[in-house]
Length: 375
Image (cartoon, rainbow, N blue to C red; front, top):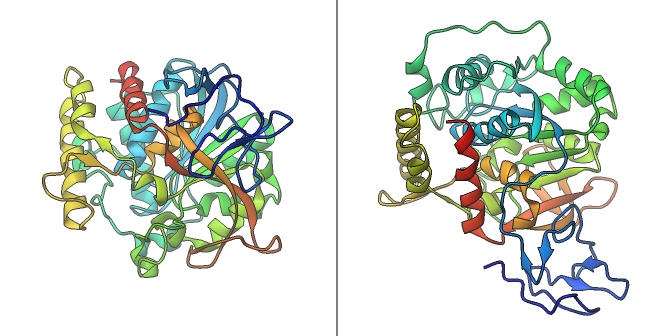
């Protein structure tokens, strides 16, 4: 199912026949037909063995420090829930979650992320920090999934008003990057917080082990009303921030609409995994709301049972990058969040781009497995 069938060990000149035409050079290094080396676990580090991609079972040998930067939409929730599950299994150390204006306004993003983490999933040891720099975007929020970002479900759960920590999201990020090693940032909202951090402490984003971003559209059509749908939502909400972040670190990996719109998740499979959980009703209502919103916006038909859960791909890529096809691209971003490929060095940066899923079934199975420890 991986699409990789070759004699093993691979001989020089072997073509693995993927999107980019991955070749084995005379020195044994895997590379694409455009000369880019295949690295970071994409086809190496045990990901390809016996002529096939590994089966996607949950396995991480290194416990990373992780920070999630989110605008608290429904798709964010699925990504966050899976990282919370890893955190509870000691497969990663989730140091904190920072919130930013995007799907919903700044204060709502903070309050509803707190409700999700503490009230829905009952996790008390992961702090949540509110943005101090993103309120300028509050009037532009699409409210695509309602005022709480969760189709009204979070709003109905609790009237609790959560207290903001003394540190802002930006202060937390700066301090974390200065004092912690091997920090992976999962950025699943507009990049306003990260932009502010880089302005506060130039070069600080370069200290991150990796910055995995759900954002941008390269060949796929845009979905951001603020830019008349020329760009993807997270990039379109703050194009200046996106441009800055892509230039600020050599360790950026972009998960654009090109993959997230085309590798969808079966809602019945996910609901089946939650049928005995106390959160069953929560997920049932949320996923029904997601489907209704997608139908209203023309993203799918009323009888569709597969959903775009965009931000979830940042989690599955983080856990098993070999399940995706990744290429190195030179990208630049304009003030509207529109991406230009093959950008000159002066205006762009070399970025890993997740183009497609090699095995959609394994990606989907991996996601449902992650809920076992949390629900």
